[in-house]
Length: 334
Image 1: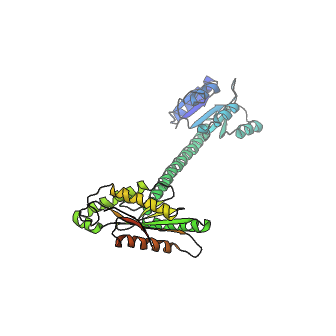
Image 2 (image 1 turned 90 degrees about the vertical axis):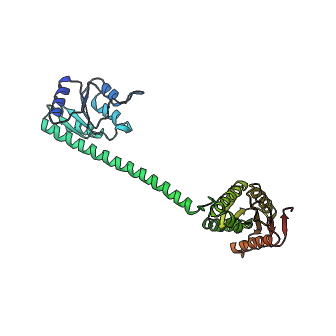
Image 3 (image 1 turned 45 degrees about the horizontal axis):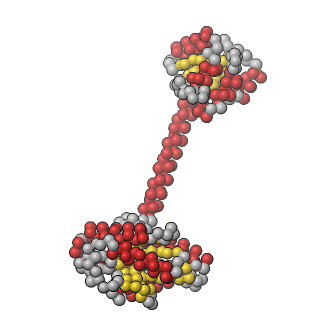
């Protein structure tokens, strides 16, 4: 550990250095004035510290800037606030010592210096500095570990809400968001829409091309949905298997059907070859639309049921179309 001796007397600096050297302390630097010490400590603007310092031995009485004033300046720098300073003084007056301790001195030794006393106080100060450095290192390590844990927890939370195959929200996230949006719509008296979407003839596609191709198809369709749904509050989720669900807050049935049409066209534009389909030679989707002004006696299950009925109607009437529960909105021109 390094020690800085600050004393305007060359003789005093030499004596202190000799005592410390004899006791095994090798990293010792000295300064002949407070200004010199400031330079070595990097306190001058635009000047880097000459060396890291673990302990300062500083004379109280020095020309230009005395030791007490210098101590205030040193401990005023956040980098040096925890560096212990032992004042070297020719006075044992209690008032003078109180001033030194009030300024932040760790300890003091009196002149003429007793080497046993000096070494005892130096070793005590260095032990304290070492323990403080170790504590800071542990605290910094704890801060880093905490940050890593927070990042890991955020990642785990994200993964717990994300479908691992498609990257869109999973069923758990869908259920949570639907309840939140349902509660908000009921409180504000606004509309809430839901799309249930099924990939047409997906099982024959899987049977012909295999599960890896089927998984790739699901990923591409999910990405198309995510790209076509542009509003901040909308949620695209994998509902199960080849089914997807999209929550559309604060929108009426007509607006929801327009978004559904955009999604249907986005999937066809992928041009994923599907010769097993009875509708088109590319992958298509059927979409059921439901929209409600949420009343006090309604429940999310009712909205899901209506959207499911609409999806069933779309399949029954030929697939590759957008329908509501009671009226077909649009269908592809065959």
